[in-house]
Structures are given as structure tokens and as C-alpha cells.
Length: 62
Image (cartoon, rainbow, N blue to C red):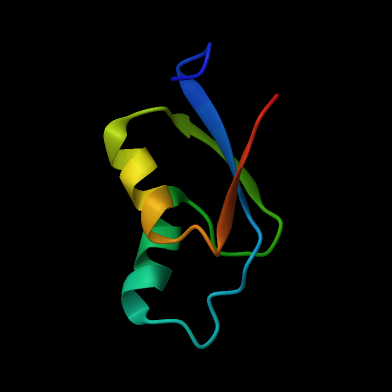
């Protein structure tokens, strides 16, 4: 894990023409608009959600 207990996630892909499940994962992470950045707790659940949509999000390393 990172040195802090939070990670920053940036949406880099559009949910248009994606399966509904991927759109729901984005909304669950608090994303929905391009280039939006959110900070979430670094938990296995969040890492798993990111792993399901790596083409739509990027983890920002500080």
C-alpha cells in the first residue's frame, strides 16, 4: 500500500457505450465526469473496483 491510507483516482475514459456495470462502478467511486479526481480510502474493495475498470480510471501517485 501507499504511504498514506488514501489514494487519488482520476477518470480518464468516458462511460458512453460501456456496459451498465462499469458505469455503476464509476458512480460508486464517486466519478462520472471526465478528468474528475476523487480521494478514497485505500482499501481492497476500492482497489478491486479500480481493477475492474482500468481503461476508465487512473491512480494518481503523489
